[in-house]
Length: 201
Picture 1 (cartoon, one colour):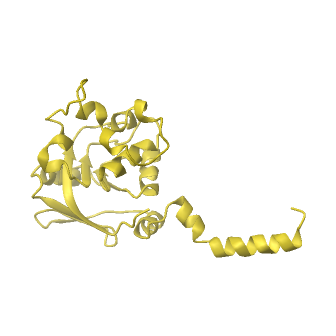
Picture 2 (cartoon, one colour):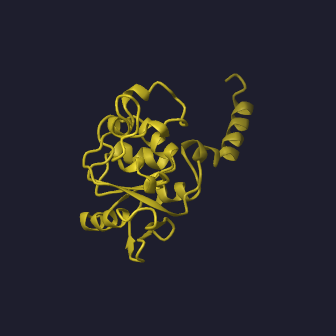
Picture 3 (cartoon, one colour):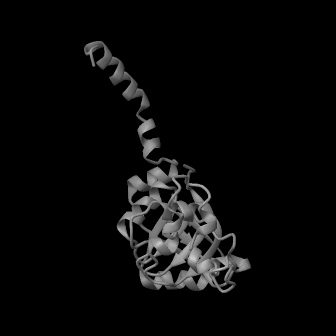
């Protein structure tokens, strides 16, 4: 998993509330167990018509937001089923940070495990960032995880809270496997000791 330290990028405004995981990645695309290749189908039913053509009005289809790395969203983002494909699709598209007033718990935790920083802020601050994102590609935001600050395109600084352990994992690029591998030496020593004490096991 890539380290998340400081992100300076385009923010896309998506003020819809209750964006569920089926809207993020429809169930038809859940057949794969690969984390790559899902970005093209992110928000599939909102991005494309029935013939597979892009819907011009959808925010991520607009030229100024095609390279968005930050998503400013409405309340209760990631609700619905607990599919991990949702953060996979978001990450594969290139979005590294989602900002909202609230997230579904399972989706929220899955984001951290897949290198995405979900940030919870009060409504008035989300509204401010939403307006900033509406300015387009020239209005880039900075998300500094170490300092726990978001800086708008106008230079306004908004602090945010993040769990210390989850922050540590993102800063160091550690998913569950990475955390286990940090203990590789201790695990090897234990296994070596057990093989001597219990050779029959």
